[in-house]
Every structure is written in structure tokens, then in C-alpha cells.
Amino acid sequence: MKVSRRKFLRMSVQTLGGGIVLYVASPAILRAALQEEATGTPAAELTREEHSWGFAIDVRRCIGCHKCVQACKLENGVPLEPEYRRTWVERYEISEDGAVFVDSVSWGQDGPESIYPNAKRNGHESAKSFFVPKLCNQCENPPCVQVCPVSATFKARNGVILVDGRRCIGCKYCIVACPYGARFLNPETRVAEKCTWCYHRITRGLLPACVQVCPVGARVFGDMKDPESPVRRLIREEMTQVLKSALGTKPKVYYAGLQEGVR
Amino acid sequence: MNRKIKIVLCLLAVVTGAVGLWQLAPRLLEQRGLYFGEQVYQAETEERTSLLPIQYAGSQVCSQCHQAQHRGWQESEHLTVACEACHGPGQAHVEEGAKPSLDASREACGTCHNELAARPGAFPQIDLAQHNSQLACIACHNPMGTARQVSLVVPTSTATPSDTTPTPWPSGVIEPSGPPRIPHSLEGRSACMACHGSTGFKPFPADHAGRAGDLCQSCHRREGT
Image 1 (cartoon, each protein chain N blue to C red):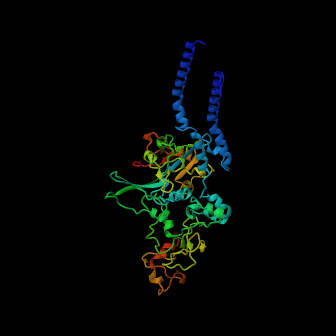
Image 2: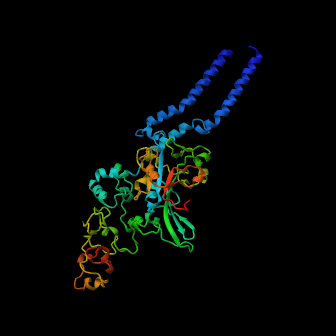
Image 3: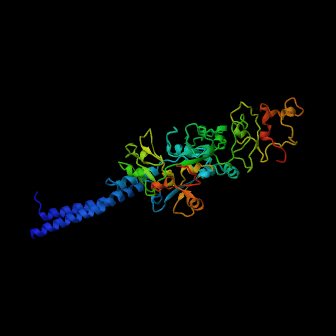
């Protein structure tokens, strides 16, 4: 086949142009097709422009009942062994001389195992003691996303950090990278998973399971864009702080009543 | 066309392209990641994650059928506690009628109310080992009671110390004021059984049989307190 130079050039330009158009348009086309499939999920709920979720914890209210840990495990199918958890409750004991002891007994199959004895620590008389619930901070600058070699974890359009279980290769790099210890390797799926603030619930307009069952209102969830949301109210009325703010990860879990010594 | 012009044009195109890429590539990488079409994968993962089934239905859903219980709960001290915090996840019950489990043991109540140093001081706590250790909590307390004060109930069944299976709730007569009060002073009267034992002048009721000797004041209080 003989092709003139002019024709060859024209064809090249056309192919290139078509390719560029496809490259730009395909994500939008595919996303539209996918959203049509997903019935019952309003597309607006997913977009960052619509909501920017925030989480707040009033440490002074927490009674360490572990209902949140239990609910999280049952809601998200997390293995019941205590070492696997998306959210957990740490008990801090601070002695008169400033020594800090932290322990955490996650909810296992037998609920009551979460009840702690009141113990003295290594001869230190405990001066104060309190619970600190923890979960994924859904950082604005997430180190786990930065280190993932296969881009399995990413920031969703409403700000929540998600994990694509089909892309994750279980290399655990993100587990090491997270300064908050929020990730773990699921022994069944071999996926490095973590709290998603119950993504499947919040996109349906429900509260995360842990917030739903908290009997004392220590966990608060809402839209940061709504000035009247419970999260915004708590942040406005109380002095709040985030964990390890010096790292620049910009966490989106705000703590009220946090004592000195909490890391 | 002049050959020189062609070469210059080619060079110009190459330079423009290179500069463009150099300027654009970091932004493209930041926006779209390392892989071609990443946004598509991410949008699909967002969809898939958002469609996962839920387990906790929410108290609002419970109230649609269990209206009487809902009213009682709303007036109880437990009104901040969601149904599913104690009754377990209820979505399967809503969809398939699976019976939700309720742990009514002392330990279940102790999950929140057992005394711990780390719990806020104002939160109601008791020492499980000391406080009526032989009885189920719900033998005296109604967690769904309407009384705003201590929700005590007069047990109708004869609960024995060995009887660890709690009476199904609600079984007793709910009395916001609690069981009958002690009509006399307790000054110097610490041993109830001296007078109210089975051989005393006013023995305790027959349906109280089996309760250990020093438990009276766990339910009965001095009149006027």
C-alpha cells in the first residue's frame, strides 16, 4: 500500500487527536456508566464538592465500653481477634511523676474481655486515667497514599481515604507509613485495610457504626461544610486538637479534652 | 520549502513539547497518579465501597415497629444509648427476620457500668463483684424503665442466687419509687436478719427465699430517702 506524505500526516494527526479526546473523556464516560449501575447511591453524596466529612471525639465522655469497636467489627466484617481493628480505644494511665502507660484491649468475641482491672503500673501510682478512642484520621496529606506502590489506596472525592482491595498487593508499606497505626493486614483477604468512616453508610446518609452505637456521644460525625453540623459545633464550642499535628498530615479527626501525654 | 526552515520548525516543536511536558507532568502525576486511567479505577472503588451492605439499621428503623419500647426508651435514662448498642446489629432482623441477640448478663451491663478508674467520675458505675453479686442486674433494674431516677423494679419471680438466667423483660411491676421502703430507723440495726430472718418476728416474704442475708438494702431503702 502506498500512502502519500500528506495523507500519512493527516492520518497521524487524526489518530493522535482521537487518542487525546478518548484519554480525556474515558474516565468521565466510565464513571457515568458505573453510576447508572449503582442504584440508590446519589452521585452527589460521593462528590467532595457536596460534602467534606469530619470526625470529632470528646475524650472526656468516653467510658471505654468498646461498643464502637464491636460495632465496627460487625459492620465491616473485621476479624474478631483483638489484634485486627479499624478503630480501637486506648486507656491512658498517667502517674504523679509523669510516667505514661497505654494499653488497649480490643473487643473480641467475648464482649466482657474489654473490661479492665484497675492496676498499679510498675510501682507507679496512677494519678489520672482516661480513655482515648482512635481511628483513621483520613488525613488531608495521607502518607499511606503517598507510599502505596500500586496506587491501591487513594483519596476519594469526599475526602475519605479508600483502599482498592483488588489492587492491593499486601506489601504493608502503608502500615509502616501511617503515623497513627490505623492500618492492619486483613489475614483473610491479605488486604491492608483501615477505617473508611463507614463509607458505605455515610454515602447512604447514615452515621458511621461507631458513632451510631456510642452510648455517651463521645464520637461525633458530620459535614465540615455545614456550620450547624455536630462536628462543627463541637470544634466551635470546645478547644480541639489533632494528633501529631507537627507531622503535617492534617488529620480530620478532632479531639476535645485531650490531656497532655496522649500521642 | 527551505530545508533550514524545516529543521528550525522541527527543533521548535521538540523544544515546545519538552517544555510543555516538563511543566505539565508533575501536575498530571499529582492529579492522576502514576497509572493511566487511574481515576476510573478510583471511581469504581468508590462505587463498590459505597454499595457494601450495612449491618446496623439505626434506632429510627427499630422504632417503626417497636413503638411501645421506643417510647419507654425515650423516657428512660438510656435514651442516649442506641437500640443496637445492646441488642446488636439489626439490619438482618429487618430484612430476613433474624432474631437479634441480647446479652442480659451482669457482664453485659458491666461493659458500661463496671467501676473503672479511667471512666468519667460522673458516669454511674458500680463494683460488679460487690454489688448484689448473686443477682442479675435486671432482677432489680429495668434498663428500658420509664423512671428518670434509678429504675428499680419489684421482681415477681423467685430469683435464687444460683439462678443466673435473668427473667425476661419486662416481667415485674415497674415502680418508679422502687420496692417498699424501710419504715424504721437503721440506727444500730445493721443485721436485718435478726428480726426479718425466717425465725424472726417479721420474716421476709416467702418469694424472697434464697436471697443472701445482707442484700436487703440493695433494693429497700430508708423511708424518705
